[in-house]
Length: 579
Image (cartoon, rainbow, N blue to C red; front, side, top):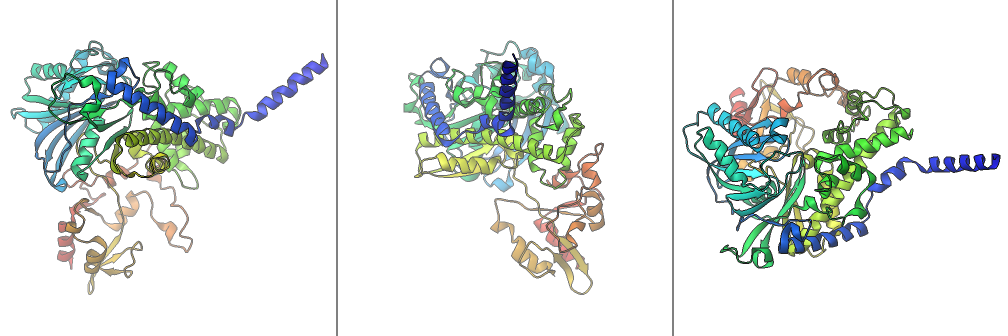
């Protein structure tokens, strides 16, 4: 009896020793052989999808009836709405041939649960009410407006203005919509409110991303979305779409909405799934469908991390084995936490600590913060690798020697490493004869712009005029404003794709209101991290960074605390007037 007990005890010890952080995360690590196997199967499913859609494949390969990409000469005033996930976006747009002259005003509305899971009538009435609100605020209720409808759910589309919903995804389950023409449902809701809006076109957000990138870059072979869900679109030869045989479509090419989020629904992707993927699927609103979505997209990435952390806690590998009720509750770890933790590179990991406070985790040591970061890194890198493999699969299908990929989506934009990870992995997996360029699209559903910021100090000197202090250039320190404008900023005509805006604020107020007072740079030890400024780390305070980055001239805050925003010409004039 003693020998048996001793044997069991030793076996349990060996089992416990094998349960390590590395063994848990190993499920998420896919080598290139596994990714190439996935690409082979995905390519096969896409070919089947072009022939018979969902009856023959898990990848629907839906016709969009968009025959050409823009060439940059398009212009006009329009309304656009984007229903893609938890938010509805309503936009008023003016599109000009020169991208710098295009403008867009956007208003976001949080989707109420009753609209997402109630009746279709409730859903489309809510959408129409939001459109009415925007038009009323702009005094445009009496003006006829043409509208584009971005609808990011799989549809059987028979024309630009007709599309029947195949199935809901991403948490939506409004009744009476599946199998119905969503354009007609929206137009009916619009007419009930006596709005003078005509829906001219419906497209998926991936098609919108491809179209928007082509407008800016004059070329785009592939549009990709990584947001609440993931999807892609590309231009296909009509003769390679057997299911369009007999359809009256007088063009040689058509954009295909792949709906690659359904890849794996037939069991063909089991070899890349983890136990955590299966739990997420079982608990989802739509079990058994959109399997690729659930391994890649933002709606599920946070829950995957939470499940891993829960297992590590119960295995006594993190937080000394002590979790919290909130941590052990499904869907309490949003994907934004992953981006915030991975961007939290300061030595104190202040943002990560704040997230643990929100989750009710009280017992932890510094090494636990590093473990949490490693889990976030591994899960999101798996997402990047799967996305890259799918991109490489489609680019290989297209076969063009030079290709531009426009990629967008909130998960992709706000994650600090996804862009570089995806780019590097595509290069590893892609045919070496194909030269590709991965472009982070400004706004696939409408118009947008990428934003970067740079800080420099300007001092008025009674004799020398305006002096610029900027250590990040090779110019003299300080240098004259004239030299700085000529050599560091340069005219807009030399930088026409990126319009520069300048926020001018009193230096003392900048120190008080921004994230850091830069005092960490006074000593020669300039490699130290900025101090945790109270406005950022205090639990009950709001992070003001968004106010600093909101630099559109017509909608930014103009206050004593945040200064005023000028375009290049206005900023030069300001400097000249103060000399």
